[in-house]
Amino acid sequence: MSTYKLVCPHCNSRMRIRTSEGTHIFLRVAYLQCVNEGCGWAVRAAFEMTHEMSPSGMPNPTVRLPIAPVAMRRQAMKSAAGDDHPDLLDQLDMEAVTA
Image 1 (cartoon, rainbow, N blue to C red):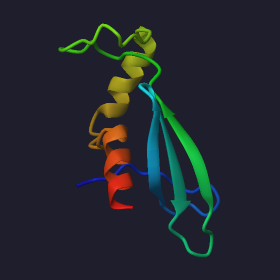
Image 2: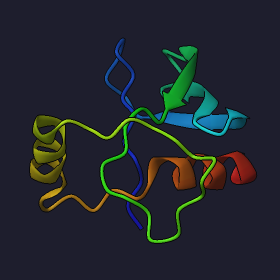
Image 3: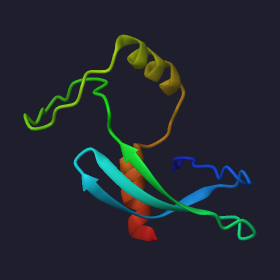
């Protein structure tokens, strides 16, 4: 299984998600730590859903996000080509459980 790659801006080592919590339907807060023991940098991060890229096949009428502009959707399609990263929020939930 591949993992979402978060890189420490100080030492370029991998960062792990120590824990995370949902604060809103569209917002998840995570606490990250660099795996390099010599660095050990820790940070709070927020992952926010901002735009709808494609409509849901099972829409919830209370979920309302702006539709992404065409240029943003095209860029996402280019970025996803050959990309096998799991969904970020699924990864946050998995790592919070195992931490």
